[in-house]
Image (tube, rainbow, N blue to C red):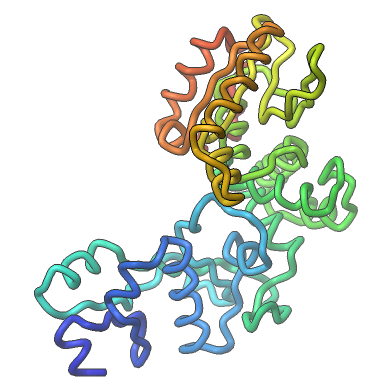
Length: 316
């Protein structure tokens, strides 16, 4: 392993823990995140994961890979970002590219208790504790995504119906944290079917647009047209679709349907919606990563901000 590491064929996540360079570069961001979490747990078996990391390990949706590996600690002197342990040797192209794709940093958070549950081989804090931690301090779009995911999983109407959650929120040390956690919990909706849809709605709320109806079923004289991600009652009653044509193409192509046939059918679907008076606007992750582009598309579709921006969304 030492020779492979020195030659750039292996990258080191932690002392004694290596991954083939080719595998590291070929992995998706969420896969590299998982490898880094596994390396930390192998190096320090007593590690307790918290925050968004704990929710991801429990199978809840997140906005792509979390920006940091969240770890609970009871020691004030070990808070914040920890020193990097990732190392790359060698001078070839693979080594150079590996240096540009390091794992996320480890960030330690103060917890009164390190009581943990074993989930998939990892020690994690309770789901409700991790959720409240994210609701109170996570980026707005990321917090709304996990909140939507829990409602969708549990088929419930409101997070505020959970007594345990309300008790945890009331126990937060600062009033501002309590207010923010309650606000994000109140804004969660089970109809958001993907992280991209949750982020889209977070940005809509941030910009002050009217809240859309999610997964509305549409009919015309020919019958059922389909469900749409976002629908607005406000004139000109636009319909919004996250990921443009992409999700339909991926779904149908997996079933072996011809690409041109898929496109023709989706175009007919859009024409039927237009005939009902619904202009259709589409966007994808590239628009969400540049929020002003989504705002411009919604305005071009005829929507106008009708309320104050959410204070909690300032750091979306």
